[in-house]
Image 1 (cartoon, rainbow over the protein chains, first blue to last red):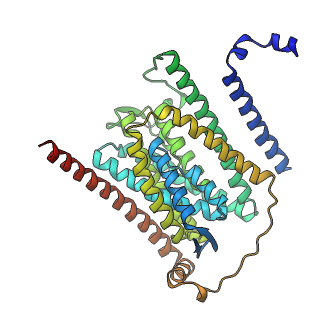
Image 2: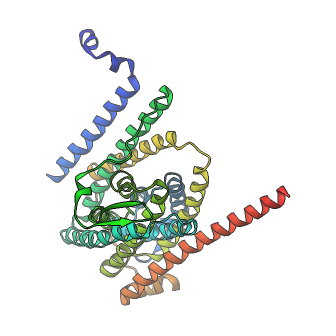
Length: 41
Length: 361
C-alpha cells in the first residue's frame, strides 16, 4: 500500500478534491453503464 | 391536498407540483435553461406516467418560452431569420422524434427509453457542468485569464447554401442552423424538453452568434418546437392534461421571473457547480428507479366520467371527442398565460421605474 501511494503522481496527492471528483464521476458512469447493459439484456 | 388529473388518471399533490415547478422555474431563470430536463423526471417521481409527463411538460415549456421570448421581443434581442432556419430543422426533427416515440410506445418500451434518455442526458450535462464549474472556480482562485479565439471554423461552416444573417452579423451555410434544429427537435419530441441546453451551446460555439441574441432566439425556437410536440401528443395520444398544465405553468412562470431577478445580483459560478451536483443526483435517482425498483403493473381504476367534477368531465370529453380542437386549445392556453406573464412583468418594471424616479425627485 505504501509503495502504491509513493508511486501515485504527486499532483493527485496534492489535489484530493479533484481526485475525489474524478473517482466519483468514474463510479457514477460505471454504475449507469453497467446498469444499462444488465437492464437491456 | 391531492388533485385528480382527469387525463393522466392519477392524483397528485398540488403543493408538491407548485413548489417543484417554482423551484425549477427559479433555476431556469437563473441559468437561462428551460428546466424541462429536471421537471419531467420530478413529475415521473410524483407518480405521473412518463408518457403524460413528457407531453404536459412540453406544454408548460411552451408557456414559459412564450413569456421569455415576448420579454426579449420587447427588448429587441431576437434574431428571427436565424431562429426560423433552426425551426425548419426543428420541424423535421420533431416529426422524426414523434415517429420514434410512437415506435417505442408500440413495442411497449417507451417508459424505459425515456428513463434511459434522461439518465444519460443528466449524466452528460451534470458531468460537463461540474467539470466547467470547478475549472472556473480554480481559474478564479489562481487568477488565470484565458484568451478565447474570435471564430473557430468547423466542417459544418463549409456546407453550401450560404446566406447573410444581418442581425447576428454572420454569413454562413443555412444547413448549420437546420442540422442543429433537427437534433433539438428530435430530442424535444422524445423527452418533453425545450432543448435549450443543446441549442444555447450550439449557438455560441458552432453558429457563433452574439451572446446578447442567444436567450431570445433560443426561446423563439423553443416556441415552435413545443407547439408541434404539444399538438402531436394531444392529437396522437390524448395525453395533454390541462389541470396539470395549469399548475405547472403558474408555478414555473412565477419561478422564472424570480430566478431572472435573482440572477442579476448573484454570482452564478458556484451555484452552477451545485446545479451540476443536483443533476447528477437526479440522474442517479432515475438509475435507481430504472434498475433496482420492482415495477409492478398498477391497477388502473377505470373512472366513470359521470363521477368527475364538471371541469374534469369537460376536459376529458373534449380531449376524447375533439383532439384537434383540444390540442389547439392547449396551445392557445399556454401562449396566453406566457404573453400575459411577460406583459405583467413589463408593467411592474415600468411602475417600479416610475416610483423610483418619483423618489429621486
